[in-house]
Length: 109
Image (cartoon, rainbow, N blue to C red; front, top):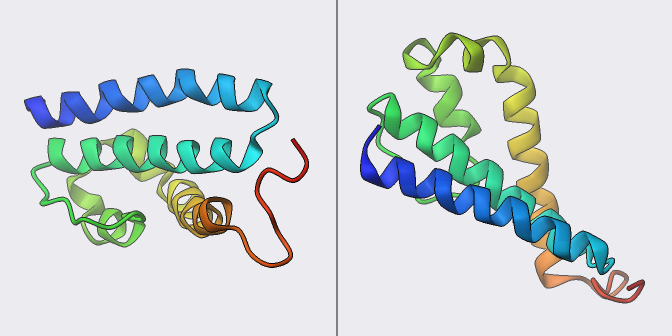
């Protein structure tokens, strides 16, 4: 595993720890946002480890599906679910970060 992939995994682990703080404070919008970043970083580490160029996008599910034959067996077995999670969190991240007229992220904290 290259140094950048290792960095992605280290930063993902740090974000996992931060999730607990946001959750304990009832800041669910930032839980979603950080959870999406955890998934994104881990999946990008997987792609890099397989020798695949990592695009600068938040949801890499299409890239995973395109290169599934190069991925580890465990990822391939769970690819459908992994892709669903990545897509869903990318969508929810946007609302959680920016909010909307009818959704203010910290209103219920």
